[in-house]
Image (cartoon, rainbow, N blue to C red; front, side, top):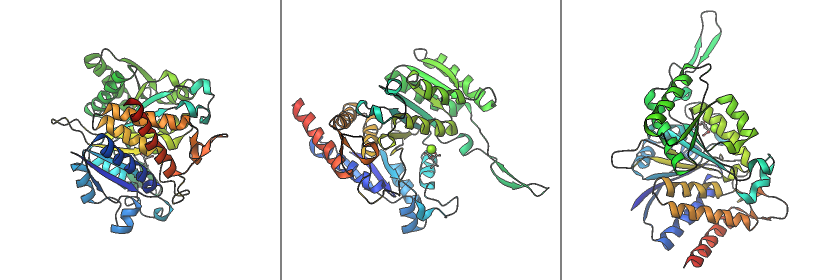
Length: 370
Ligand code: IPM
Ligand code: MG
């Protein structure tokens, strides 16, 4: 029996989570998977109900779960709340309190959507990049930080980029392990030409590769050059491993190579524990999209693909994960599109029809295999 915690959040979060729940039900009914499922409020929904975006009780539920499936948080209603109580604290707080240091952000182009990319098809066809972004360290959390007043009356804002060897090694290991399951290549991204933390990053990743992963190809790419290469020739990359802030920027960039943000899932993994478990949270890369919330038109595929990642990385169910991904691919190949990925000649559908079509496709694949 696996414990799942569902945190739909705000905006389109609950709408796309509904489709993921139907998918989970399908696996329970048709594949005999056994889940104990809890659900809780986070983000703006939790601010409205309890006055804070993330409660200790929610953190406790997340800690007890085998995996957390997260929707999205935030919206204009909570835009004026103080910096430390805003809805986004829910996601930053979960990353920090569960020690979710490795944020996996795939950017893959599905063949039927190749023309959705702003880049030419010949540059992105078959694109399949995995960005591993460090997510509990670096400049997001480094001390000293703050806004101080100087003797002359002007102010100074301070943030600090800090990485220790163990922080670099553990995220490096995640990247090398992933590369072994993929095309065997890691690009380590930093600014070792100007930053000491970047130089240590490069040295540490190099030593780790030489010691534990001699079979994986390692290249070093400066972060600015990486941004350029991602647009110029993105298919040169397999796995990219990088610090928190660079990963934040580069993963947004990479998401746009696909032209379909509504399609992209992500996973954030914690330390491998002695019992073989690791804390993990899965969420779509897209936000709460308040502009389209409540209209039944959001694309549920990123949430559905996040559940596929959950099957793969937390439950070790590779074939089930691949089954979901196959269903997504064939529904797209049939020409079904939500508004965000609509193209001429395709059939426009809403959130629940898209979710239903995935279930129907799963049924078909099962029937064909029987
Ligand atoms: C992301 C987001 C977050 C981040 C924000 C909402 C705190 O941009 O997940 O990429 O910067 O990590
Ligand atoms: Mg971001």
